[in-house]
Amino acid sequence: MELTTPYAFGKTVDASFGEAEEKVRTALAREGFGVLTEIDMKEKFRAKLGREFRNYKILGTCNPALAWEAVAREINIGALLPCNVVLYTTDDGRTAVVVMDPVAALGMIGNPEMTEMARSVRGMLERVLAAV
Image 1: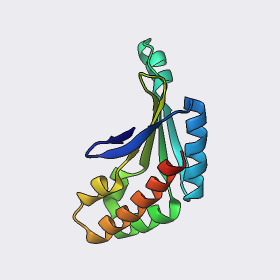
Image 2 (image 1 turned 180 degrees about the vertical axis):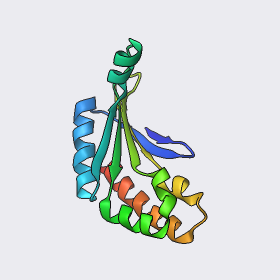
Image 3 (image 1 turned 45 degrees about the vertical axis):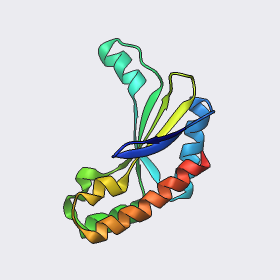
């Protein structure tokens, strides 16, 4: 199933959470992205609130060459970085993979160069999703 919001896009897959995460990480690496940050929301909610939650992980990803170019063109762009990729277990036991839409995020700046770069990044992230 395709997942679309005004700020993100993704899909659900018939794979375990661990399998989907492995595929996402591999596909991100193929596109030149590394994972800078990783937040395990299930664990954080358990540790901080004593509450149980579904598998839910946020991967803060970055393509260093593109980040360099973006910051060189728009110094305050760091407020919108990195590109987040979210994985979570759905109610039916499948795994959702959702990525931040860089066109939505960077399009609000009003800088045509950044919007064009965002379109390129979106294409990369679409290929990541296609590989999962």
